Image (cartoon, rainbow, N blue to C red; front, side, top):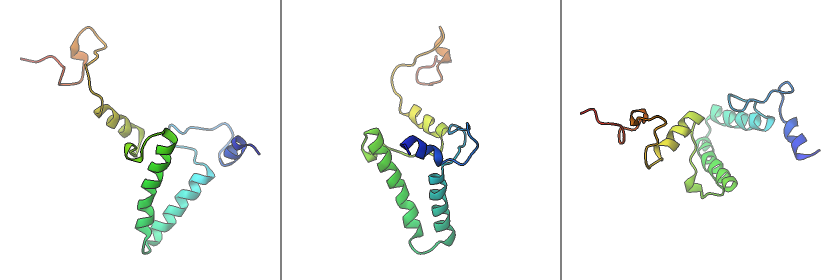
Length: 115
């Protein structure tokens, strides 16, 4: 079995459905990971919170390796909209207005004064 066939075999939904951008589907490996964490939290045994808290570092390290960044340069966000908003906060420079007027610019730093 090739790597692609193994990956595809991990999905349980009907053939042809793949919509990660919205909500899924979740592969069998992801479902198993969610089940492990749910089970850990549902019992709230001693050390459970430590095991869950360690998952953020694990995810950041994996992403840093995959993207070629340091771990301290990777942050996790709960959804795409929040991630895009955080990325926009980091943008600096001149305002690029799409229209002939700078009134189209949403930034108060470069929007025309109302004086």
